[in-house]
Image (tube, rainbow, N blue to C red; front, side, top):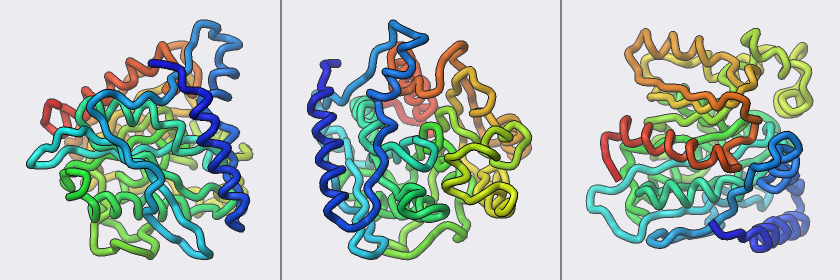
Length: 323
Protein backbone atom coordinates (compact mmCIF):
# COMPACT_ATOMS: atom_id res chain seq x y z
CA UNK A 1 0.00 0.00 0.00
CA UNK A 2 1.29 3.47 -0.75
CA UNK A 3 2.19 5.78 2.12
CA UNK A 4 -0.52 8.36 2.58
CA UNK A 5 0.69 9.39 6.01
CA UNK A 6 0.61 13.13 5.27
CA UNK A 7 -3.02 13.05 4.17
CA UNK A 8 -3.87 10.91 7.18
CA UNK A 9 -2.23 13.46 9.53
CA UNK A 10 -4.23 16.23 7.87
CA UNK A 11 -7.45 14.35 8.66
CA UNK A 12 -6.48 14.23 12.33
CA UNK A 13 -5.60 17.93 12.50
CA UNK A 14 -8.83 18.94 10.80
CA UNK A 15 -10.85 16.83 13.25
CA UNK A 16 -9.07 18.33 16.26
CA UNK A 17 -9.63 21.92 15.05
CA UNK A 18 -13.33 21.27 14.45
CA UNK A 19 -13.74 19.73 17.88
CA UNK A 20 -12.03 22.64 19.55
CA UNK A 21 -14.54 24.99 17.93
CA UNK A 22 -17.59 22.91 18.84
CA UNK A 23 -17.65 23.49 22.59
CA UNK A 24 -17.20 19.88 23.75
CA UNK A 25 -14.11 18.06 24.97
CA UNK A 26 -11.55 17.57 22.17
CA UNK A 27 -10.82 13.93 21.43
CA UNK A 28 -7.51 12.52 22.54
CA UNK A 29 -6.11 11.10 19.29
CA UNK A 30 -2.62 10.44 20.65
CA UNK A 31 -3.19 6.72 20.14
CA UNK A 32 -2.77 6.32 16.39
CA UNK A 33 -1.17 4.20 13.71
CA UNK A 34 1.88 6.45 13.81
CA UNK A 35 2.28 6.41 17.61
CA UNK A 36 1.87 2.63 17.67
CA UNK A 37 4.51 2.24 14.97
CA UNK A 38 6.96 4.46 16.85
CA UNK A 39 6.45 2.50 20.05
CA UNK A 40 6.57 -0.99 18.56
CA UNK A 41 9.52 -0.43 16.24
CA UNK A 42 11.85 -0.05 19.25
CA UNK A 43 11.66 -3.80 19.78
CA UNK A 44 10.50 -4.80 16.30
CA UNK A 45 12.57 -2.64 13.92
CA UNK A 46 11.19 -4.27 10.77
CA UNK A 47 7.51 -3.46 11.37
CA UNK A 48 5.69 -1.26 8.87
CA UNK A 49 2.60 0.91 9.43
CA UNK A 50 -0.38 0.32 7.17
CA UNK A 51 -1.90 3.58 5.93
CA UNK A 52 -5.28 4.18 4.28
CA UNK A 53 -5.32 3.46 0.55
CA UNK A 54 -8.75 3.12 -1.05
CA UNK A 55 -8.70 -0.04 -3.20
CA UNK A 56 -9.96 -0.16 -6.75
CA UNK A 57 -13.62 -1.15 -6.81
CA UNK A 58 -14.38 0.33 -3.36
CA UNK A 59 -16.33 3.51 -2.69
CA UNK A 60 -16.31 5.64 0.47
CA UNK A 61 -18.62 8.04 2.24
CA UNK A 62 -16.82 9.91 5.01
CA UNK A 63 -17.94 11.64 8.19
CA UNK A 64 -21.65 10.92 7.94
CA UNK A 65 -23.61 11.92 11.05
CA UNK A 66 -25.20 8.89 12.69
CA UNK A 67 -26.29 10.26 16.07
CA UNK A 68 -26.79 13.51 17.97
CA UNK A 69 -26.48 12.77 21.70
CA UNK A 70 -27.17 16.36 22.77
CA UNK A 71 -25.53 19.71 23.33
CA UNK A 72 -24.92 20.17 19.63
CA UNK A 73 -22.73 17.06 19.55
CA UNK A 74 -22.70 15.05 16.34
CA UNK A 75 -21.17 11.60 16.03
CA UNK A 76 -19.70 10.51 12.72
CA UNK A 77 -18.86 7.37 10.80
CA UNK A 78 -17.29 6.39 7.48
CA UNK A 79 -18.70 3.78 5.13
CA UNK A 80 -16.61 1.71 2.70
CA UNK A 81 -18.45 -0.51 0.24
CA UNK A 82 -17.96 -2.38 -3.03
CA UNK A 83 -19.00 -0.42 -6.09
CA UNK A 84 -20.67 -3.52 -7.50
CA UNK A 85 -24.16 -3.87 -6.06
CA UNK A 86 -25.50 -7.19 -4.85
CA UNK A 87 -29.24 -7.81 -5.01
CA UNK A 88 -29.49 -9.71 -1.73
CA UNK A 89 -27.24 -7.28 0.11
CA UNK A 90 -23.79 -7.74 1.59
CA UNK A 91 -22.67 -8.58 5.11
CA UNK A 92 -21.56 -5.50 7.03
CA UNK A 93 -18.94 -4.90 9.70
CA UNK A 94 -18.95 -2.17 12.34
CA UNK A 95 -15.30 -1.26 13.06
CA UNK A 96 -14.59 -0.07 16.64
CA UNK A 97 -11.20 1.49 17.37
CA UNK A 98 -9.18 0.95 20.52
CA UNK A 99 -7.39 3.30 22.88
CA UNK A 100 -8.34 2.27 26.39
CA UNK A 101 -11.76 3.97 26.20
CA UNK A 102 -9.86 7.27 26.53
CA UNK A 103 -8.07 7.90 23.24
CA UNK A 104 -7.97 6.89 19.58
CA UNK A 105 -10.10 7.61 16.52
CA UNK A 106 -12.08 5.88 13.82
CA UNK A 107 -9.29 6.70 11.36
CA UNK A 108 -7.10 4.02 12.97
CA UNK A 109 -9.24 1.26 11.45
CA UNK A 110 -9.71 2.76 7.99
CA UNK A 111 -6.95 0.60 6.42
CA UNK A 112 -8.57 -2.61 7.70
CA UNK A 113 -12.05 -1.37 6.78
CA UNK A 114 -10.88 -0.62 3.23
CA UNK A 115 -9.40 -4.08 2.80
CA UNK A 116 -12.49 -5.81 4.18
CA UNK A 117 -14.57 -3.76 1.74
CA UNK A 118 -12.28 -4.95 -1.06
CA UNK A 119 -13.09 -8.50 0.10
CA UNK A 120 -16.81 -7.78 -0.40
CA UNK A 121 -18.06 -6.41 2.91
CA UNK A 122 -19.69 -3.11 3.77
CA UNK A 123 -17.55 -1.65 6.54
CA UNK A 124 -18.28 1.21 8.91
CA UNK A 125 -15.59 2.93 10.98
CA UNK A 126 -17.27 4.68 13.88
CA UNK A 127 -16.59 7.55 16.26
CA UNK A 128 -17.88 7.10 19.80
CA UNK A 129 -17.62 9.24 22.93
CA UNK A 130 -14.52 8.62 25.04
CA UNK A 131 -14.14 8.88 28.81
CA UNK A 132 -13.04 12.53 28.97
CA UNK A 133 -16.22 13.59 27.21
CA UNK A 134 -18.72 11.10 28.57
CA UNK A 135 -17.74 8.07 30.69
CA UNK A 136 -19.42 4.66 30.65
CA UNK A 137 -21.98 3.80 29.37
CA UNK A 138 -22.19 6.62 26.79
CA UNK A 139 -19.83 4.96 24.33
CA UNK A 140 -21.83 1.73 24.44
CA UNK A 141 -25.02 3.69 23.72
CA UNK A 142 -23.26 5.30 20.74
CA UNK A 143 -22.22 1.96 19.25
CA UNK A 144 -25.70 0.49 19.63
CA UNK A 145 -26.96 3.60 17.81
CA UNK A 146 -24.42 3.00 15.04
CA UNK A 147 -25.72 -0.54 14.46
CA UNK A 148 -29.28 0.80 14.27
CA UNK A 149 -28.09 3.45 11.79
CA UNK A 150 -26.62 0.70 9.63
CA UNK A 151 -29.96 -1.05 9.51
CA UNK A 152 -31.84 2.18 8.87
CA UNK A 153 -29.54 2.92 5.91
CA UNK A 154 -29.20 -0.63 4.67
CA UNK A 155 -30.81 0.02 1.30
CA UNK A 156 -28.46 2.89 0.43
CA UNK A 157 -25.34 0.82 1.14
CA UNK A 158 -26.64 -2.61 0.10
CA UNK A 159 -26.40 -4.08 3.62
CA UNK A 160 -27.91 -7.43 4.53
CA UNK A 161 -29.41 -6.55 7.91
CA UNK A 162 -29.31 -10.19 9.01
CA UNK A 163 -25.53 -10.30 8.69
CA UNK A 164 -23.91 -7.52 10.70
CA UNK A 165 -20.68 -8.11 12.62
CA UNK A 166 -18.87 -6.03 15.23
CA UNK A 167 -15.08 -5.85 14.78
CA UNK A 168 -13.12 -4.20 17.60
CA UNK A 169 -9.51 -3.79 18.64
CA UNK A 170 -8.29 -3.59 22.26
CA UNK A 171 -10.88 -1.46 24.10
CA UNK A 172 -12.90 -1.59 20.89
CA UNK A 173 -12.75 -5.40 21.07
CA UNK A 174 -14.23 -5.26 24.56
CA UNK A 175 -16.98 -2.99 23.23
CA UNK A 176 -17.65 -5.22 20.23
CA UNK A 177 -17.95 -8.17 22.62
CA UNK A 178 -20.36 -6.22 24.80
CA UNK A 179 -22.53 -5.52 21.76
CA UNK A 180 -22.61 -9.21 20.90
CA UNK A 181 -23.33 -10.63 24.32
CA UNK A 182 -26.12 -8.10 24.99
CA UNK A 183 -28.12 -9.03 21.90
CA UNK A 184 -31.81 -8.77 22.73
CA UNK A 185 -31.25 -6.73 25.89
CA UNK A 186 -32.26 -3.09 26.33
CA UNK A 187 -29.69 -2.27 29.04
CA UNK A 188 -27.42 -0.24 26.74
CA UNK A 189 -29.91 0.96 24.15
CA UNK A 190 -29.88 4.63 25.18
CA UNK A 191 -32.17 7.01 23.31
CA UNK A 192 -32.14 8.68 19.93
CA UNK A 193 -32.96 8.03 16.31
CA UNK A 194 -33.73 4.74 14.58
CA UNK A 195 -34.96 3.08 17.76
CA UNK A 196 -37.34 0.97 15.66
CA UNK A 197 -34.31 -0.96 14.40
CA UNK A 198 -32.45 -3.70 16.25
CA UNK A 199 -28.94 -3.14 17.63
CA UNK A 200 -28.12 -6.88 17.58
CA UNK A 201 -25.00 -8.14 15.83
CA UNK A 202 -24.60 -11.60 14.32
CA UNK A 203 -20.85 -12.04 14.83
CA UNK A 204 -18.02 -10.56 16.92
CA UNK A 205 -14.38 -10.18 15.93
CA UNK A 206 -12.37 -9.51 19.08
CA UNK A 207 -8.86 -8.32 18.28
CA UNK A 208 -6.91 -8.46 21.56
CA UNK A 209 -9.58 -7.24 23.95
CA UNK A 210 -10.77 -8.42 27.35
CA UNK A 211 -14.26 -9.77 27.93
CA UNK A 212 -14.37 -9.36 31.71
CA UNK A 213 -13.23 -6.56 33.99
CA UNK A 214 -13.71 -8.64 37.13
CA UNK A 215 -12.02 -11.88 36.07
CA UNK A 216 -8.74 -12.57 37.94
CA UNK A 217 -6.86 -12.25 34.64
CA UNK A 218 -8.09 -8.65 34.41
CA UNK A 219 -6.34 -7.57 37.62
CA UNK A 220 -3.99 -5.13 35.78
CA UNK A 221 -7.09 -3.14 34.78
CA UNK A 222 -8.16 -2.65 38.40
CA UNK A 223 -5.41 -0.13 39.03
CA UNK A 224 -4.93 1.02 35.44
CA UNK A 225 -5.67 4.61 34.50
CA UNK A 226 -7.74 3.90 31.39
CA UNK A 227 -10.45 1.62 32.81
CA UNK A 228 -10.66 3.71 35.99
CA UNK A 229 -11.15 6.86 33.93
CA UNK A 230 -14.01 5.21 32.06
CA UNK A 231 -15.70 3.29 34.87
CA UNK A 232 -14.60 5.03 38.05
CA UNK A 233 -12.44 3.35 40.66
CA UNK A 234 -12.63 -0.43 40.85
CA UNK A 235 -13.08 -0.39 44.64
CA UNK A 236 -15.93 2.12 44.66
CA UNK A 237 -17.66 0.98 41.46
CA UNK A 238 -17.35 -2.79 41.39
CA UNK A 239 -20.94 -3.31 40.23
CA UNK A 240 -20.35 -0.98 37.31
CA UNK A 241 -17.21 -2.91 36.34
CA UNK A 242 -19.24 -6.11 36.48
CA UNK A 243 -22.07 -4.60 34.44
CA UNK A 244 -19.60 -3.52 31.74
CA UNK A 245 -18.17 -7.06 31.40
CA UNK A 246 -19.37 -8.94 28.29
CA UNK A 247 -18.82 -12.31 29.97
CA UNK A 248 -21.67 -11.56 32.39
CA UNK A 249 -24.20 -11.72 29.54
CA UNK A 250 -22.83 -14.60 27.48
CA UNK A 251 -25.40 -17.27 26.75
CA UNK A 252 -27.72 -18.75 24.18
CA UNK A 253 -28.22 -15.41 22.44
CA UNK A 254 -24.52 -14.75 21.91
CA UNK A 255 -23.18 -14.75 18.33
CA UNK A 256 -20.09 -16.57 17.00
CA UNK A 257 -16.76 -15.12 18.17
CA UNK A 258 -13.34 -14.75 16.61
CA UNK A 259 -10.37 -13.86 18.83
CA UNK A 260 -7.05 -12.73 17.40
CA UNK A 261 -4.61 -12.09 20.23
CA UNK A 262 -1.16 -10.81 21.03
CA UNK A 263 1.18 -12.64 23.36
CA UNK A 264 0.09 -10.58 26.39
CA UNK A 265 -2.19 -12.56 28.76
CA UNK A 266 -3.86 -9.45 30.23
CA UNK A 267 -5.64 -8.89 26.91
CA UNK A 268 -7.13 -12.40 27.02
CA UNK A 269 -8.98 -11.83 30.32
CA UNK A 270 -12.13 -13.95 30.44
CA UNK A 271 -11.64 -15.48 26.98
CA UNK A 272 -11.50 -19.12 28.05
CA UNK A 273 -14.54 -18.73 30.31
CA UNK A 274 -16.42 -17.22 27.39
CA UNK A 275 -15.45 -20.17 25.22
CA UNK A 276 -16.83 -22.56 27.83
CA UNK A 277 -20.13 -20.67 27.82
CA UNK A 278 -20.30 -20.65 24.02
CA UNK A 279 -19.55 -24.38 23.95
CA UNK A 280 -22.46 -25.06 26.31
CA UNK A 281 -24.79 -23.49 23.76
CA UNK A 282 -23.09 -24.89 20.66
CA UNK A 283 -21.96 -21.47 19.41
CA UNK A 284 -19.01 -21.36 17.03
CA UNK A 285 -15.77 -19.69 18.09
CA UNK A 286 -12.16 -19.66 17.05
CA UNK A 287 -8.96 -18.06 18.30
CA UNK A 288 -5.51 -17.26 16.97
CA UNK A 289 -2.45 -15.90 18.77
CA UNK A 290 0.60 -14.20 17.27
CA UNK A 291 3.41 -15.43 19.47
CA UNK A 292 5.84 -12.71 20.46
CA UNK A 293 3.63 -9.99 19.04
CA UNK A 294 2.96 -6.61 20.67
CA UNK A 295 -0.39 -5.13 21.55
CA UNK A 296 -1.38 -3.00 18.58
CA UNK A 297 -0.23 -5.61 16.06
CA UNK A 298 -3.34 -5.14 13.90
CA UNK A 299 -2.15 -1.70 12.75
CA UNK A 300 1.20 -2.95 11.47
CA UNK A 301 2.79 -5.43 9.11
CA UNK A 302 3.73 -8.26 9.37
CA UNK A 303 0.54 -8.86 11.40
CA UNK A 304 -1.99 -6.72 9.49
CA UNK A 305 -2.25 -9.16 6.57
CA UNK A 306 -2.74 -12.31 8.66
CA UNK A 307 -5.29 -10.50 10.87
CA UNK A 308 -7.21 -9.54 7.73
CA UNK A 309 -7.03 -13.15 6.57
CA UNK A 310 -8.39 -14.49 9.86
CA UNK A 311 -11.21 -11.93 9.76
CA UNK A 312 -12.25 -12.76 6.19
CA UNK A 313 -12.07 -16.50 6.85
CA UNK A 314 -14.21 -16.20 9.95
CA UNK A 315 -16.79 -13.97 8.27
CA UNK A 316 -17.05 -16.32 5.31
CA UNK A 317 -17.61 -19.22 7.67
CA UNK A 318 -20.25 -17.67 9.93
CA UNK A 319 -22.07 -15.75 7.20
CA UNK A 320 -21.82 -18.65 4.76
CA UNK A 321 -20.95 -16.50 1.77
CA UNK A 322 -17.77 -16.26 -0.23
CA UNK A 323 -17.07 -12.80 -1.39
